Length: 365
Image (cartoon, rainbow, N blue to C red; front, side, top):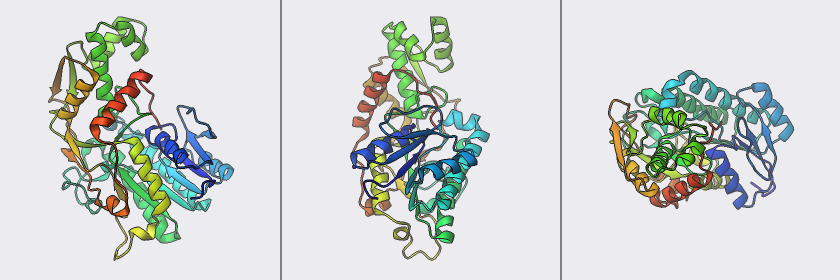
């Protein structure tokens, strides 16, 4: 990519897209364009409100912008509760977004595309750590199966367009991400931001800072706040955590993920990933730290950083999800990139970010 190349970030207002925009600016790229759907980002370059599920809107966008490079970061995302509740939306919306952006990239002769998936594409009982070759070797985790299938379809779409049309579309599978621009919605957020917000609210209650609680929840009365807090297991004495706390997860600071994506876009092409392959498959690249932590230990770290002195209550009647999700990042390391931010440092920065914004963000697509 040249510094003045036209670069489109599909889904620029979310956690991933906003991190990508900052990484590109830091690396000196000046012609960045973004799309958003729900929340207009405050950025110093052109953005367009586009429903990427709509084929005609996407076609219009590509004709107007004429991007040379595309980062496909847009997705309907959420935690275990949202994935299991809105199954139809998670598969439909993500299939539409992916199909429309990839096909329009092909029709517009985009030079290169980077597609961002998720490590939930791997089987529920996948060997650990999860290698790229473990894809489609056994059943998926039930609670997020629709989302995972949609992400696998996008990965295979990139491979298929490359093989049939000679395009240069790279797929990356980031591990669990957290950072500025995250979604803190108590119902739809991923585990870490939801956990951090619940513990923060419990601390405010513990300190009898009810106006801060009302401001955070964006409600006017204590009764309404209590109704919400009770639904999510938050009191001044305790915070409910779903499951046993035993499942292990890997987390990556979103700024590190974005730097990895820019590095791959600049330095890695599809042929670099297919050498010595008899059958071209599993060409995607895991992006992660290669370090895991149990949900229970994560909750204890969050509690300490937030400064809440009450109890953590693990609700064993709620689903645990996949037992482990540790990525094998040896392929990424062999390509020349490694993460910089460890979890303790990242959690401190993450809480400072949340305490500064102090409100639950809407869902990002």
